[in-house]
Image 1 (cartoon, rainbow, N blue to C red):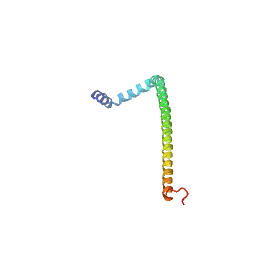
Image 2: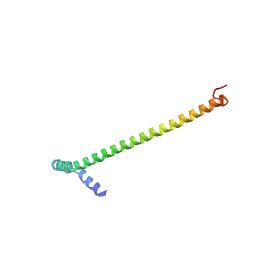
Image 3: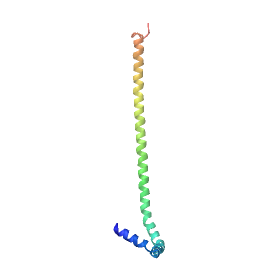
Image 4: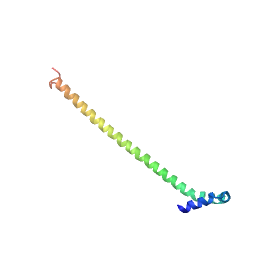
Length: 103
């Protein structure tokens, strides 16, 4: 870190050195930027492919989870309906003292 501070302190002491660094960057940038862009393109494409795979897998997992939740709700609804029907039958039986005709 001290080396970086020394370098930056050296650049701050003279505006000429700052201008020279700027000119150097401006001269090198047109050469270096296309090379970096060409090298980064396959990397960016690979990152996008992996992102799409992860998204597709996430959609698949969420669809499966939704299906399982739907099945669970249907099963709970079925059990609740069966319990309600049994309770209604028990209540009707108690109201008629076990006589199905209610006499």
